Image 1 (cartoon, rainbow, N blue to C red):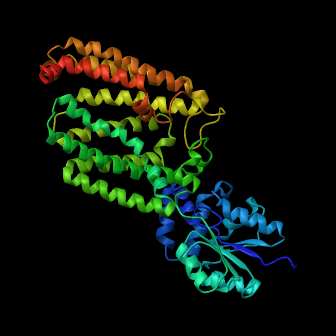
Image 2 (tube, rainbow, N blue to C red):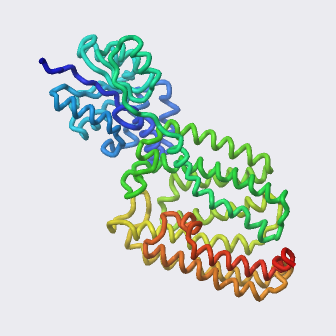
Image 3 (cartoon, rainbow, N blue to C red):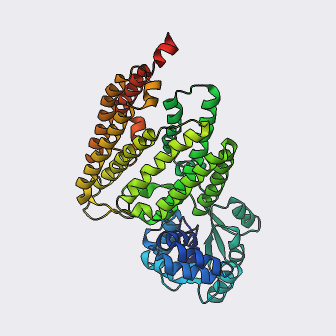
Length: 477
C-alpha cells in the first residue's frame, strides 16, 4: 500500500498555537514601549501586514514560549514520522512564523504575511494552490477565515469551530476534528474572584464610624461589587501585559492567558464588559465614588505598565491602591474618615506589599532579579527592614489615634484600644515571618483570608475594639 505523502499545512494562530501572535505582539509591545505600540496601531490599523511587521519589531516576541495545542502538535509529529511534509501557513508576520518553525523543528520555508500582503483567507489559499496544486495538501485551521483554504485542500483538520466542521462534512470534505474551545470556568479563573476579598476594606469606614444600618450596608456592598469588577478588569490587563514573565514563572505559567486556555481576544472582550459594569455601578452610588474607581483603575494600569518594575515604588503603589479602597468606602456612605485611619492603612499595606515581594524572592530558584520585577533574593534583608518599618508606623499611628477627639467619642473605654494593639502586632509579625520563610501564598491578602491563626488575631482585635466602643453592651444588653 502506497504511503500517504500529501503535505500537511498548519495554520498557526488558534490552530498550532493556543494564542494569536498579533495579539501577543500588541500586548508585549504595550508592556515594552506603550507609546510606540499605540502610535503604530493608529498609523497602520488599516494595513494588517504592515501592522503585524511593525508590532513584531517592537514586541521582540519569544516564540519558544508561546503555548502549543498539543493535539495539533501530535498530529504534526505523526505526519512527519510518516514522511509527510509539514509546513506553517499563517497570516502572522513571516519573521515570527519562521522563528516558530525553527523552535519546533519545522521547515523555515513558510507561507506568511510579508511585503505588504496579509496572507489570510483567499490570499493564503491561492499561495497554497500555487505551491501544492488544488487538492494537493491537507489543511488545519480553526475559523471561518479558513474556508477558502479548506475549499482548495484535499482534507480538512478543524480545531474547535464545530459549525465549520459540520459544514465541511456536509460538503463531502474529509474532516478531522480536534478540540480547541475555551471554557467559561477558565475565564472566571482569570478574573481572580478570590482576590475580591480585598474589597472588604470598603467596610472599614462604616465599621470605624459605627454605622450599622441596612441601607448603609447595601450601598457599601454595591460599591464592593463595582470595585470587584474594576479590579478584575485590571487583573486581565495585568495578565496580558505579563504573558512572557508568567510563562517563565514556576506557577504563573498555568494562568489562563499565559497557558492559552483562554484566548487573548476573549480576555480583551471581558475587560471591556467589566469596565463598563464597574463604571455603571459606581455612577449609581455617586460621582465622587466613580472618580475614586476611575483613579484606582488608572493607577492600577500605571502599575501594570511601569510602576511594578520600579523598586519600592511598586510597594508604595500597592499600599496606595489599598488606601483608595478605604476612601471609596467612605464616599459610598458619605461618612467622615479620620486622617489617622488613612495614615494607618498605608503603612499596614506597605508591610503587606513587602511580604508579597519577600514571598516571591524567597521562593525564587536563583539570585537574579525576578522577571518583570525589581527584586531578587539578595534584597530579602532590605524588604524585611521596610516591612518592620511599616509595622512600626502602623502601630504608632493606631496608638496616636487613641488620643484624638474622635477616639474619645467612639470608644468610652479608650485604654482597650491599647490592648487591641497586641493582636494587631502579632498578626503583622506573623505575616512578615511567614513571608520571609516563603510559607505564604504569592498574595498576602488572599493568604490572610484563609489563615485560621491570623483570622483569629484579627477577630480578637475587632472584638476588643467593639467592646471598647460599648457595641457588645448595646447589641447584647
